[in-house]
Every structure is written in structure tokens, then in C-alpha cells.
Image (cartoon, rainbow, N blue to C red; front, side):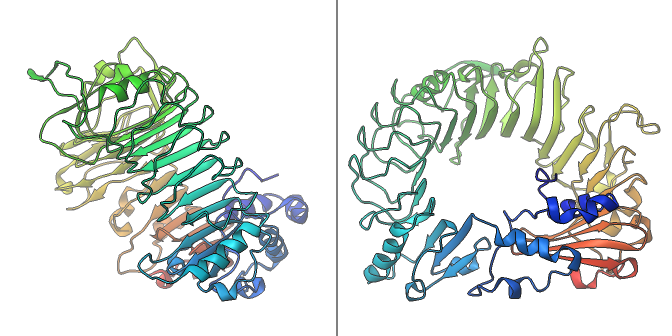
Length: 536
């Protein structure tokens, strides 16, 4: 019944909707174990690891859920103990007699400068090759000892062995080469069933026929050669290009354009690359990232984009966009870009973005032919009056406001009635020097106050708010009475730790602590919720 609900606290609350669903919870309820580690470090006793699970009515369901988990991760190496997401961890091969049959993923990390580890790795890779359940191997450094027949994904680390046809199993679907791989890949070496390939610092020019005809995803990082016609398979749906060659290495297009009454004649995307991109009629995702900064202006002509593109991420220093965006786009990410919005989104065309992310020093004024569901804004906003665009249901602002007390934030629609404001989710920018003048619409249901202190924001919270998310408290470590009516409170501590408080009724709340991919649940009385000293 609730298999499509990802968050476990939501699954519990689902079972509490009515008495019948609560009584029948054993028949349908199971917890999502994707982000729950099975064991703690070097401890394989499940009950000991989850004895802090404090919901007796759901304990059997929780234990059944983690015991039925099939996609276990085994981590082996010198510093994997600092990683958060694994079910088994070993740092000595003597303690490992076989790969558990429920392990599907293996992560190997080690310090390359430590020598004389041949016997250790020989046993480790022999055990891996004998496994019938491992489908994903990260950190593979050799093929000398074979691979399991079940393998589907390999990420190489410190690997530089020559490859010939048959070196890689036909079962492979995902393959990642790291920067240490310097061997040339010849036609026929990569398995026909390969779906995703990543090459980092690959030093050779890629020949036609190297990539399998059915390849769907390709990532080229710091590739310094031409992309000749016929090299990229027509089946590609996802293409990622990191750090294209610097000017002077390859032939580049020169296109005269006009920008703010000046003439700029430089384009730093190689012609062969642009032509290769435009020929990919099946391409749905394109990600171009350039970290190298040059003093000249960069120009990207959008006419080279394939017509069926759905995802576009352009991160090019000081790039100027010219041309027209395809109307097929659903996700767009523009970093450090300059453009005329009426030019790249002409009013004669209609656009609907599920996600739009841009970095700028001002808020864009979106015309009526652009519909956006989720908007991310970053960059230093310098305007004294920040007018957020109307017609958007979710806005996240990842910016710092200098002299924030003197600024004004306006929302689309009538501030008194909120009748024309569809905004339901908002993340506030960081206020550096006091709170700006603003009135949040009563339509907002989910408010993330970002890096601001909660006590500085209390007067902005609308009475209709359902969910409050924050990361900082003042020195007064209590929940003020003004927000006790909110039914869902989320506090983030860091990337791996957060606490969710879900109000059940006037007397009790359900608390979920997520620490290092372990979830601890407890039922807490309303008087205990008011104290947050344990969070500080």
C-alpha cells in the first residue's frame, strides 16, 4: 500500500491514518532499507545494532525489513571505515572467508603507496570472482584474478592493464576508467552490452567503432582530441563533457555576435564537438562543464543542441548563450551564464521546466511563456528590492544577502489575499546583516530557513505553515510556542545527520533521528519535544 512512499517516517504515519490500517500494518508495511546500514563497524549482530529502535509496535516490522534487504554493500580497504554507506566492513582479508551471498555491491579503497599487497589482493579478488551475487565492483585495480559472472558494473582505480577483446565480460553494463588508465581502447574491446562508459584523462583519439552501438551514456573528462563523425553512437541518450580542450589545441568556431553594443568573436567549444552533439537525435541529457577560466568571453550557440533534449547543464566561465533553447527541455542548469531571456526563450514558443537552476546577481523576470515547477537561485543578489517571480510553486534561494536589513523581498501576487500566489515551498537566502523587509505568503506550506538562525526568522513564519526546516538554533535551545502548531519539523546537522519531528496529536510526536545511515525512531511526549538541548 505504501511502497511508493520513500521516507520511513511517512510510512509509519500512513499506518496511523485509521485504526484498521494500524491493526493490519503487519500485512502491508515494510521499511525502506535503501539508506539503512545493516551492521555497525565490525559488528554483525543485527539486534545489537538496532536495540535503540524504540517503537515496540513496529519492531517486528523493522527487523523483518532489514533482514529481507538484498542489495548489501561490502566495504574493504584502508579508509572505508570513514565512509557512511556500507553493510559490511573489513580491513584485513584474513577476516574474510567468503563474500556473503546477499552482497551485491563491493567497494575497495587502499593507499597505492603501500607495497607488497599481492597476496592480500589475490585472495580478495579470488573471493570476489567466486561470488554469484556481486553485480557492482568499485575500486577494481586488476583483472588478473577474474571477475564474477554476475558482474554488471565496474569502476576501476589505479588500473592500467592492456585490454583485448574478451578481457571484459559481456555482462558489463556500466564501466568507469579512472585517470590512471593510459591504454588505447581498440574497436571490439568494449562489450556489446555496455550501456554506460566514463573515460577520465583518456590520452588517445577515439576511433570509430570503439563505442558499442547500444551505448546510452558517455562521460568524457579532459578529453583533448577531435570527435570525428561516426565516433559517437546514435543511440546515446546522455552525454557529459568535462573540461573541453583549451583554445589553440583544436579548431574552434568563430562567430560574430553582438552583446551590449560590443562585438565578441570567440567561441571555445571545438567545431567537431558541436557537430557531434547536434547529430545525436536521441540525446536527452547534455552536461558541459569547463573549470578553466580565460579572460576572453565564451560563446555557446544553442543551435547545436539536439531537438529532443530534456536535461541541459551548462557550466562555462563567463559564457554567453546565443540562439534558441529547445522546447523539449524539462531540466535546465545555467552557471555563470549571460543571455537575453527573450532571445533564448522567444515568446512564440512555450516552455515547461520541472527544474530550473541558475546563478546570477539578479532575479530573472520570466515571461509568461515559461512555466517552472521548481526554481533554484544562486549567486550574490545585489538588488535592493528582490522581486521573486510569480507562478512558481517551489523556490530555493542559495545566496547570501549583504546589507540584508536594508533590502526588500517581494512575492508575486497580492500580499493581502495571496490569491494569485501559487508558492508552497520556499528556501530563504542567508541574511548577513539583519532580516529584510518581507511578508511570506500564506500559501507557503514548507519553509526552509537555510543558514539563518531560527529565532531571527520567527516573525516571518506564516500561520498556515506545515513544515519547518532549519540547521541553526540560537542559544535558547527550545522550540518557541509560535511554531508548536507546525506538524513537521526537520533539523539538519550535516550531510549525514538530521532529525525529523512529526506531530501525531496534541500529546505525542514521532521522532526520527538519522545518523550515519541509521534511523532511530521514538515516540515522545509534547513536553519533551520543547527541549532541544540534545541537538546542540
